[in-house]
Length: 233
Ligand SMILES: [Mg+2]
Image 1: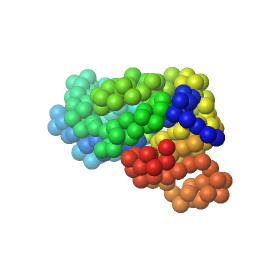
Image 2 (image 1 turned 30 degrees about the vertical axis):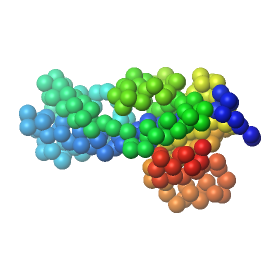
Image 3 (image 1 turned 180 degrees about the vertical axis):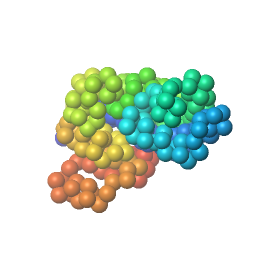
Image 4 (image 1 turned 60 degrees about the horizontal axis):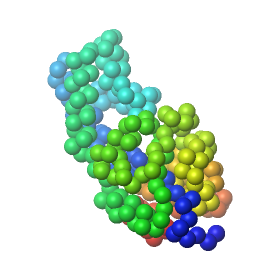
């Protein structure tokens, strides 16, 4: 399909965590700092044990659940401990905010896409205000017209509904719209199932999935770095 810069129905959708910013790296550092202080102030575990318990809670409740430290004290002590929860939350928050930054090429890529006439939005499995908060703190919120989340839609990526809602909200044409994310199933397959193309970045995609892309001739491009988006779009 021939497109021009004037097509306003061309939308680039972004995942947030580990796509626009290096979430995994700062999250572990912040969690360990929080647990260290909680242990020093009476949480009766050693620091690695505490990290193990917290990771289990995060796996069960999801990384964007807001009360991991409440559950941690409840599991360990049998009741919630407000002082330890506050220590954990504030330490986690402060360390996270100190470390939060976009990938080096994120801003250049956003500027490039705007210059090519794309409209930009976010599709995220998470809580709407938390995802906006990250965009605001990174000072990249001005680039985005909308943030569509699983909280709002009631379904998570890769469910087709979240992509359909996002396309409708942005009045995007799926044939001319692209999803950029780091997870093969959630971001790439989900988008392709909704009729869009996809770009995988920072992914840890396995050989089997690469073969599947080839075999099914899926419209998924794998790049190493978000700065390489300008070679494709
Ligand atoms: Mg992600």
